[in-house]
Length: 331
Image (tube, rainbow, N blue to C red; front, side, top):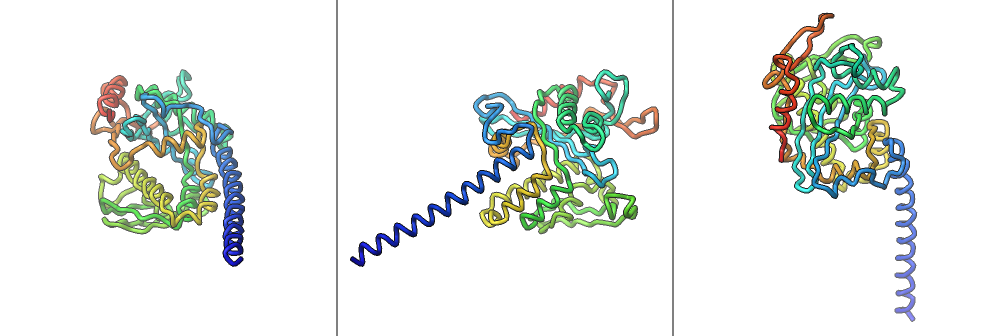
């Protein structure tokens, strides 16, 4: 009798746990679908539109970061990086595209701008058409690098700051010390003043604000090497890796709902959530090959007709950029 009662209680416990699990899973699934629809042009979050992981073909994704509303030049993509992946081997190449590269914008218009303006010109005022912006930027980068860049992701730095705070901050190893002037407020109409941010070599726990300052600092005071676009791109990769590592930690999972809410206002992509997750699982950031298109290889400093400091290919040889990128790819 007691044994039968004990078995019944055990069954009831299992049943209750099962009901709780199913309810949680259903809620989570609804959350995932809503999240996938919010961040992607593809509304079926769990389906693949590409099937690229089943092939040996190289997959290229353009990742663009902008400041977002409230910033001066809110949708200028000051961070542009191609993540190039061979899915079968996990070999990953990260190619930094300098924001000052001088290009025709829009295509075939006879008008020129820095490449960081391609996205906002196509997207329109207040980022009204982010799909047009993403497609235009991907097409321009494809033309310049010779890579077939079909996919793109945009990152709003304000939202990314909130995401890092939602997961409790990140542990970051700073490989090189530096100090930099940094705006007190991203909107100069609120506060046009500047402050000095300092980062010392070693491991630090960073909240969202500190992580973004580390990733975006440009006006370096005491270490010129950290003031380049390539150095900023490397720092942004460090922050992204730290965030991915934190998300994989089971201790972060209780905060996953608030993290998804923050991330929903952070990224937008023409990949489905399933494809984006597949790409993230296959890429190898720890052993990635870093490539910088810069004045150290195929570019030279120049000045535009209206006095802007810009970058151009040496001897106006655009093919040299394509050849250089091809030589540097991790095969």
